[in-house]
Length: 394
Ligand SMILES: *Cc1c(COP(=O)(O)O)cnc(C)c1O
Image (cartoon, rainbow, N blue to C red; front, side, top):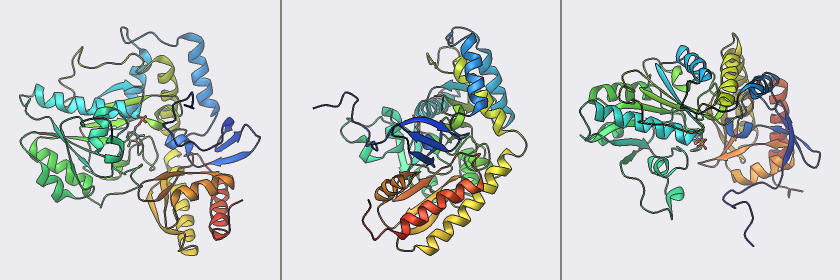
């Protein structure tokens, strides 16, 4: 019989009642250490008291009023994002895929508005993930996700991630933009070679292309800076999409752009019913405030380095189980030798929640305010599961 909730997810057979910091408590009373953070969303931990206060204070006043009117919260959040990035202007939506799609619209509109309507194609990378709308499936070009949904949306070309020569060779007179994740998340925590993003910036300048970063996963502090591309000097984009951790668990996305890139986005060109509603803005403002407090990113970077050292040790100790450590900051994980799906299952049985990624990678994304003792607890569980691997799981 058809499940009453569409079975489009491969769900683990566990549900949670309550969360607190990096812990989740299941309906049957078990406590789990959560290194999924809701797939890089709950980056300030579950039931964060400051986010609860921001949300509930706003909930007493006003939930929704539509973009027919001024939304003051949007101005505050936009200003804070602008203060900490390349951007001059921000559009708010509700999810990652909408944010990337808005970014592509901005890039195409820029070309059309500056006299080049023939430039509409976007070059993206193999192994990328940009969400599940029809256009963003085509943008990522992953055959597995496109299968059965008809002809892919037109206008996307694909090259290997990390290869500047291939990118250059793919540029044509119809190219509008380049779209990349500074660190590929779903694809397998793939980091590009040093200088890649700066090279893309130069390439885009040379050919008059818009540079778009999908920082839906790598953004909002995950790599130890607000946005992952900020690790590389001279690599600023024209347009950037972010979402996941922006609302700390409240659904919200944002498309950031320079004044030049967004010049064509006049009234009527884009919109969203829910995008940037007062509840979302109240939480996003508090998230940004917390992340930009002095010392916050120092902590993320300290924990990122410590975690990497500990994971490297696990790889050394269990070479038949793990191949290497992947990723950057706390967007990190282990490429497995054994099946990553089986590893996720066994870790869950042992009390640690993790998430798979492409290339047989195990993603370990604790909240950014994790402590080193909590990291050690997680590492001890992974170590024990790896040590017992040859024995049947209970
Ligand atoms: C998760 C993700 C998306 C899609 O976000 P949704 O909120 O699921 O629409 C897009 N791009 C990247 C890089 C992501 O990690």
